[in-house]
Each structure stands twice: as C-alpha cells, then as structure tokens.
Length: 133
Image 1 (cartoon, rainbow, N blue to C red):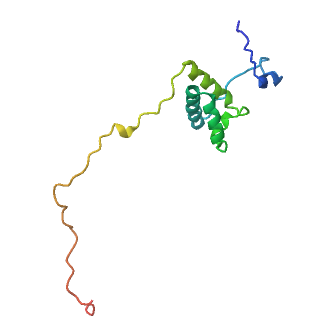
Image 2: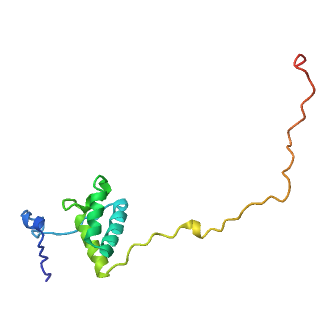
Image 3: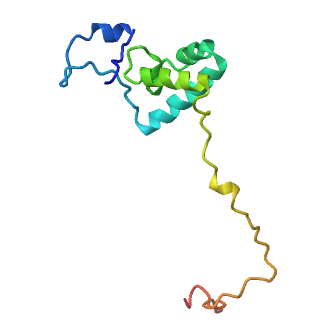
C-alpha cells in the first residue's frame, strides 16, 4: 500500500477538486528545454550563493520573461525549488556546459610555399585605340 503524499503548501490546500482517480496529485511541471537550462543553472548558483543571490537575480531580471520561474505564481517555480534543494543537498552536481567541439580541432595555418598559378584564360589586351575599338 502506498503512503499518501501530504503537502504543506498553501496552493495545495486551496485545491479541493478531486482528480480522476480520486486522489490529489502533486507534481512538478517540467519546463521546456530552453527554459530548463536557465532554471538549472540559476538553481545551482542559488544553492551555492544563498537566497540573497536569488533576490538579486529577481530584481535584475524582473523584465526578462525567461526568469518568471522565480515568481511564486509561475508553474515552473516548484521545479526550480526542487532543483535548488537537490543542489544544496548534493543529490545532483552543478550542470556543466557541454565540451566545445572547437577545443578538439587543431587549427592548421596555411602558409603558401609557391606562387599562385597563372590565369589560364587571360590575355594581354591588344593595342587598339578608342577610335578603332
């Protein structure tokens, strides 16, 4: 038998509508990939630097819609808080950027050793004056 999940969040206590199964379902809404990377990076920084850092980001990026997850009313806020908790507890490591392909490619500088070949289809202009032309 499964134990019932009890939430102490105010939003969950206001939800009195039953689900189709008759149980209250509390879950995370996963953001799309482009927002998820921002959420994950921000959560890692906030877990290391504290709530003051989160407040600074909230003030600085208040006009940026990609940082709406910092608002309590945003659907991705629960995902963000879970990530902050996981980073703080050490359950997951901080996200690392993927290795750049350019680092592994050795650049070769081209140094010409011979003069370029002559043009195949060029000819010296004839000596015609403007009147004859």
